[in-house]
Amino acid sequence: MLKSHFLVLSSKILIQFIWNIIFFPIWWYSLGFLRFVSRIISFWRSEQRALGLFVWTRNLFVPMYGQHDFAGRLMSFFVRLVQILFRGLAMLFWVIVGLVLILSWLALPLAIVIATAYQFLEM
Image: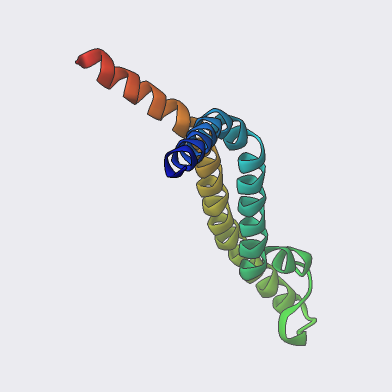
């Protein structure tokens, strides 16, 4: 009796293991990829809010400190322009990091298969 339970359970475990190996690439390139991309997009949105890039660009022509004369408007414009430039570069950095992570997600299983095949061919 104990032997039959062991055989039944071990066969179920083996079937589930084989199914997981077969299903993994499908999950990795479909649902897993969509979840990963949605997290990257969420990260980009939070970084944009943290940097306040849209707020700075929306208020580019608004004078700072209520100085409505020409010098105040000119100084406010250039200060905000410099802020937008540096904050835009920071946002560009995070976009590039996210794109590299997305491309790495796509390439990682292929790289693992190629490296494994290379190791077997070297034997």
